[in-house]
Figure 1: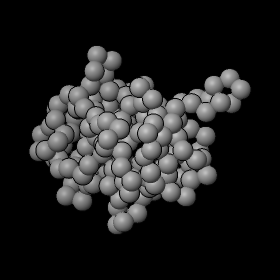
Figure 2: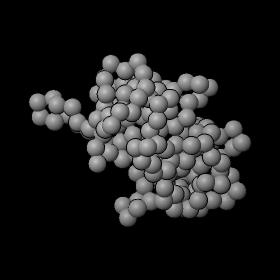
Figure 3: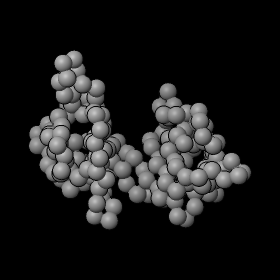
Amino acid sequence: MKGTVTAVTGNTIAVRAKTGPPTVEITPSTKIFQVNPAQLTDVTAGSCADIRLAAAAAGGAAQPAKQITVSAATNGKCPESSSERVLRGTIAAVTGQSVSLVNSSAGATAVDQNTKYFKQVATTALAITPGACLSSVGPVGPNGVQQATKATVGPPAGPKGCPGS
């Protein structure tokens, strides 16, 4: 579920979303993260990275990263995967205007003035406030309320709203 938080009452979050349940319940076991704007200096060796790539240009030329989100390792490990447009793993090095991941066959990924940077950190339910963007996962109970196992809070919605709302 992705949407804009409209109200918070105790552990219950009301959300405006195009799809998914309009109500999310946060429990003591819910893992909660907050994503904040960052900059290239926040991208450091040893951190985890989620690198979103721009579509390849005509002729297949590689494009600079569209977005990089950094986070701390969980139990000393970073998720690792890659696809045509997403690279995930441990940052091996940041050299000038490029970022390399450990165990990645993609080589160094270029960054430029259009690359957006974000930093994800663990937080508490207090970070979930009206107007914030919320993405959550978890089962939906018979009452139509999602029991969130993971929730990610983003900066307040802009004029176009949050993704998915």
